[in-house]
Image 1 (cartoon, rainbow, N blue to C red):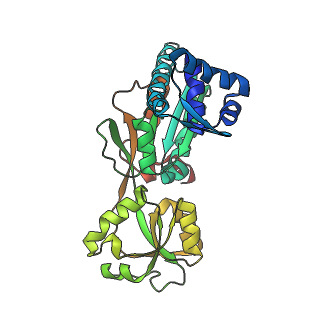
Image 2: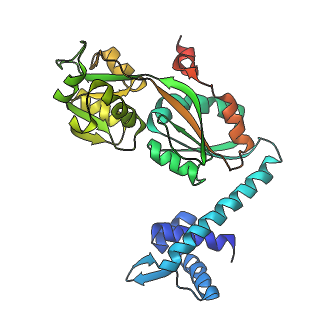
Length: 305
């Protein structure tokens, strides 16, 4: 059994398609099929059921997939240690961040990092807080950045900055520019991020202080991105609670209006796996980041002031 065979098996298993896996791996279909067949023959174990043109993992294949992924993660970690012996001059850094952090806060720091370490390859995936925490937990990301708290004993969370939430409505909405009572929250239609979003979790967690439960809200739309939520509210779909970073331009332009209601601040957190080796590349990025800084300290804001 070789690492290359494991890599091919995992690619086929995740896509449940030999041709697509071969294309992603830049291999021929025959070479990909041969690698899987060699594993099955060597251990006399059927890993896939083949039905017509599609394939599906057998029970044995599902069990083997867990172990194969773990071996590949450990092999990648070993390679990283050797790379680190040469210093922070090359290698890669795999990051994942929730949407507000990824789109409005992190890029300036990544720019600083690339200026200092141009030979480090940086990749960034974007998901909600739950997804980012899962990637860090599974060692599929070196570092994670989220705006919601997580409950995972294997993941360490460090507060980096604080973000303000704001309730916004279309400019012509009856709430625009005025103070509202908590119970009035049940009288509006709402546009919210999907469950698992840090923004939504913090908003719903604050509702009891207003005497309102999450189930009391009339949620007209659940959308998977901050930009989609902002656009829907601008179009008149309802109210939302969102990061002030996301709607700063719309508030200034007058396409959205803020509502006067006390909302909690939230923290931006750095996530890392407690038991995973922290590469020199990851350490170098961490050194560039603030600790419990206010968003006024963000380098993008410093450049504008």
